[in-house]
Length: 472
Image (cartoon, rainbow, N blue to C red; front, side, top):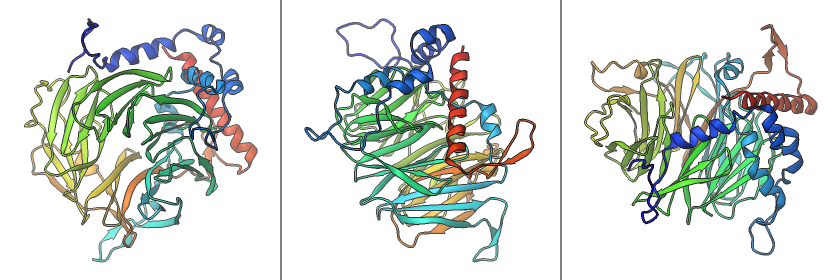
């Protein structure tokens, strides 16, 4: 498949290149502050038009009313708030303490929250020193299976969990309390993610994708297009577009700047997962034991035929911008492949040039989910398995692989055994410190009051809107 600028009415529509959508999204934000004020894209206008958080279902048909004016207004104004945090701001909120919070869900309805100090070492069973997980919370969060979890970054404040009970629970990680639940979907929740620290995205078996604002948890947009279950969603690193795959065997692109669908293409097979690479220059689609890698122009670059059914895919890159694909599968391993550069890609779909760099060992059953985070220039990967174990790995040696040695075999640096829980999903975030730095670099204490929390959120939103106004 490739992008064809001359579309004939008699032919089926192709999925337009992502570059064209990203280009239009960038141009939309470069009209200047005066034009944006006239278009009603300022924050105060958005707040006047947002609908109330949906807590109940429509008693008539069980679905939110399509006639709600607030939802129409907020859908058109999604472009005024959705953005990706800049590296400069992310670095200001970096976790200098080296502490991570790993949250996992399972079939048994339980959420496991584990904290780990990366600088602390404990003596293992065989006398070796390794980091240790400290349970922060373990409790039944839903009335049925937990299928998705997500934590906001950086300095994780929000946690969202969803499952087959059709509800999304929202938790304040700093205060360690539940804020309530979102009842927008009419089917099992299949995906949750925070594309920015102020927005939550969810997908469901009801075929819809929803975007919420974390300030009041109002629904900014409900994206409809899939004819059946949405299996997975991947937001571009720019947070301006996203891709979704579903049981209807289609790949759909959504313009998050406008809050509507952009294009779709039939895959010919069910896409079970989709992920962007770290650079956003490529994306991958999972189908059974096959991983197809595409360019932003929808050209098939590579196909990886893994020896076992793939459960999850993740990407990370090293200091030299080399892209690595992490594949979690039913072979009880996380296998890491080194993707060729875009210059080397010939687009012939040959996988002979994709070497296996390493395997992450330790699980005794299929690996269900993985996630990664970068702390102090070190990449850490967490994995969960049907064996009930949660693992954490340090990828320092793997990302330094030169290709002159055999694939590495890496054991976990930390292990937590849930004693039999069938784990389904996992997320990792850095622990927010209780001290923040002033502009002069001196630490100050955070005030744990409702007023200070609200001021902090408002400051973050104002910073984000300033960035949107200044985008070129």
